[in-house]
Image (cartoon, rainbow, N blue to C red):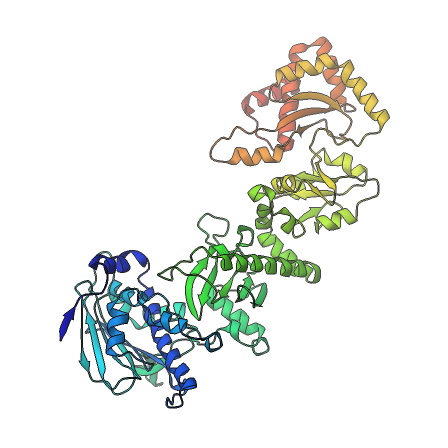
Length: 626
């Protein structure tokens, strides 16, 4: 038996493979099972092209066994096996892949799935084991050989005894350390979980002898542990089955099991695409939001598979942020993986798949909105805020994709409607889309500014989410109709006669209004208004920042100093107007008190905080007591 060095540039390369390329120790089992699956694929392929090879596909399998006492994991397959030369070439040379060369030598017509491409997956086993023993008998050899290594010190190859073709890998699991509990890989449940997570759809059965507690005496309630062989993997993914063979219950159960949800999904979306980037997708829209959905801890992404092996549990690049609520899987053989198969390389095909999936989700939502209104409203109440976020994010570049999916509460209809439905119902003389923002429908209804619009028999969209004003601003106009905030300073709903009459009132009281503004410097203007019906005052705004936007900015941890340009409007027909004019002539000190009180009242109506509540309270008491 001869001791040999690895045919690598240095011992450090193997150390790099073990400690740097792989970031997740759990994947060692995925890599070894994938290699075993390749070996089974190869012998089955040979049986199709070589009449001398008599192999039935249903006889091919992968077997796992655990020995807790000796700290051993054994992975066995009855695949094509390796000769002495192949053992030395494939295992003695890091990054030499027999699977890759096998795949490269096949014609397009002969193509079958081969998972292994890089030849480094095997070495991931050194992350969890301090010695690896590989015994293999090749279909093309009479002699079996054992390859054995403890890592960077090199390896040995010697003759061995094995009766049938195939490969047996025995891992000596490391002792536990303070940093990591290696013993967990000797636990049946842990191994079953890893197979289910990473290798559930390997097309050959993965079997293991497992312990089950069985009732042996019902009267005495006596149980005994019994051993039995169990197939750990499903083999055929649900998304590869014929649709007619899969029921709604099958999809629902798969979703609830795969994504640990207690409720069935609201919508199931299937997709199978052939072309430049071929893939299959099975997507789900949940019926409720995860508890952490609107937190920074939430991770979006679809599970990514290739040839039945899970490569990434959450591939974020497959979903835009505004569809981050979607769960599901994508299975494709047309992706470029990095050397560890843990991450994707920059991939043109991945971008194609992501774009197609985005379009598919959008189309399905549009169909739901049209044909299944109740379910869509249920969806929108749960995830609509995410769609609105998508509209104003990235400077509104995605607004065209999403604006027909969002809904707002209609003052007239008293229910959620789309922008398209609002525009179709507009009277002929209405030229803009009116909206009002607030923390609730009831609070918006009580805003003084909505009265004038309602009097014109125009509908108003009520915006109750903090993102709404930003989304509307990003859209800017819909079907050539501009959006107008009823809290803006100039709604332009008066007749020319009304405008002239109001202008005269403001001109005649110019000094009064200037003195009021001098007393409340926060506002950019004070003026009399004819837009108010019963309320004495209101705050309106001008410019790009609305009062509702200011509230959002004010709520942020860091004071951004972004404020709306506000206007204090006084109802010209309200008795308070006469009172102000009288005080201005006869009692300037009392006039100042009224100015501050009215401004505070306007701020309260607008939902803005009062900076000096104690002072205002004293002023009110002083005025009332007279």
